[in-house]
Amino acid sequence: MVTLTLLEPQQKKPLHEWNFSSEPLIRIGRSADNDIVIADDLVSRYHLELRRVDAGGQKSAWHLVNKGINGTFVNGILVTQAQIPNNCLLQLANGGPLLKFDVEATPTPTPTPLPVCTHEGNNPNNLFCIHCGQPITVLQTVRNYQILRTLGQGGMGTTYLAWDSHGKTGRPQLLVLKQMNADMARIAKAQELFEREANTLKSLSHPGIPKYYDFFVEDGKKYLAMELVHGEDLEKLVLLKGPVNPHIAIFWMIQTCDVLDYLHSQDPPLIHRDIKPANLMMRSSNNNIVVLDFGAVKESSTIPGTRIGAEGYCAPEQERGQPLTVSDLYAIGPTLIFLLSGESPFKYYRQRGRQFRFEIANIPTITPKLREIIDRLTEPLPRDRYQTAKEVIAALKEL
Image (cartoon, rainbow, N blue to C red; front, side):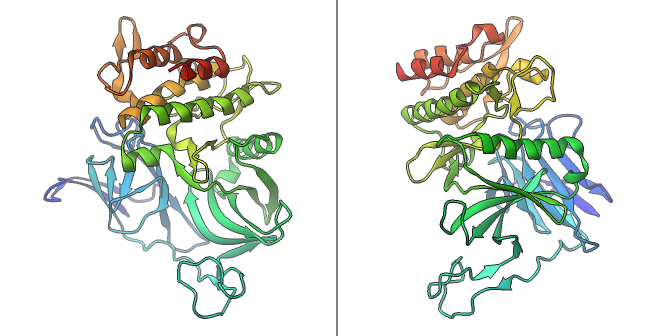
């Protein structure tokens, strides 16, 4: 039995309670088709999901997947994907509604890590021994990959920090190992998307795209090994530190457009379909942008597909399942709005005549010239927008 209680933010008094007995998935958001509907401007239409994960008859663990543009905080810590503890507090956006999470069953205990090195004198946070250089603890070994810790849990798969002692680059290296979730492996569309991400990364080579290392099946489970990008995604960066300087935001979007130009120039053109701040990582070593999450990538075609895209960032034609390369460029506009305002672009999406447009005149850091660029990026009709990423780059460089 899972109980979620809406609390008064100051005194923490219960305001409303929801109980779930056997549901494996609980959706929370502003839209009426969620399991828990919270009417608050800070809450996205589909703000977060709670997923029950069973492990071989053991008690269940619950994983949170944030989908809200204003973020979700677990006990005051901003998270994107994480296993959540019993009796924790979930806050939908900074200063937003507060929910208490209670579950009768204790979350699935994590197996005791297998020790690899027994040398003393290592810091508890160290991944490797300061004496022998070997991993201090290994949670699991899959082929030649030693899994050191869990990085995140999503609806499609679980990502791990792993150590490859052989190394795809000719030397040992840390990397990301993504495992497809067992419940998703039974869904044909999920398998297609997981394999599409692997095949797409394998065919691409660009400094703004994570490097592909390996794809394999082990004990019936599918794995994707790829580059570990050290840095912070733009959503988390802005939510933690606030809006960024316009010059920095423009610099990042020029780099993002360079990656999109590379994708759109493939034969056939590739459409990312999920450009948003959470999928744009600032690499710590040089502050350059790396575009993440290629599970939604689709070849350009006239055949309607599945509706994929984040609220506030999704072009109208993509909402209808008919994405174009200019749909990726549309997302640059609301991304700029978020970076410069620190708020969901959906907040500025209002009716103008017979159409809906972004009304951003009151954001002080957006100059009239930049507003013109954002307006053109987000024109409702694809033919009225910039047609190539190169055009967007040229316009941003003139600012």
